[in-house]
Image 1 (cartoon, helix red, strand yellow):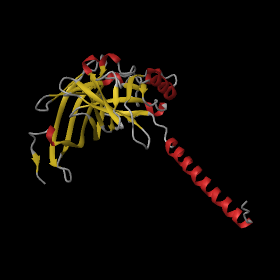
Image 2: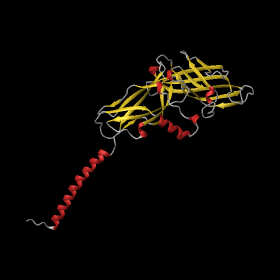
Image 3: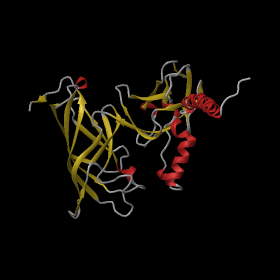
Length: 325
């Protein structure tokens, strides 16, 4: 029988302890690596997002929606995802934000005016994302002047679980765009025709409603300044091929008289990116309309010059005259 000395026993115990520690630590690390991230499917855009949708010639637009699989390891399986509209989330958002101010609620984009390009979307093994294409038909929208929200959620996910709501639901505030829409900086003046009293106004905003038409609110009316009546001041602004402007009153109660309506555009080469021109648009408007206040129906005169500068793709403006520096 072999009798070990005390020193030898201590060395043996320490060696065994270190061996167990290494083995146990390695196992724990493997578990940690596997559990560090819980894989799930999610929407690349989630929560509340303003989503621009460019209007095409046939009066439709495409909203692209990306899906992904999170995690630090590779995706080893096909993941099949379906999406659907989610009116309950929009209803909860509206109530949380506006409580009982129902007039301020964001309306849901009607389900009859959009379609998904597929019934289900596959993220193939070895990949981490795919894209859905949602086609929106503006011809099917009855009230084009509303500020619509398209509520979307992942409704099923085969292969990986659906992520938490904050990553798997989207409230897409749809912002239609065309070549004329946007916020034009500058100042205007609103004058009471009867008295000559005037008020300064700020920037002008054009909201796209078709490829060559927008709408705006007359004078200084906005949803913030006059939430009860601002829609009474809607004006349609259409642009011809030579960019001539026609302003009309869709409701027919403003006694609108257009006195001046022009847009001048200038193009320059982009300093650092050869894909783009720098476009500067100057909108010059003067028109007369009737106040829609219950107590005041006097005629008002608006006049102002506003400017919008942005980058535009050269490929979309092949025939413009470019100003040399």
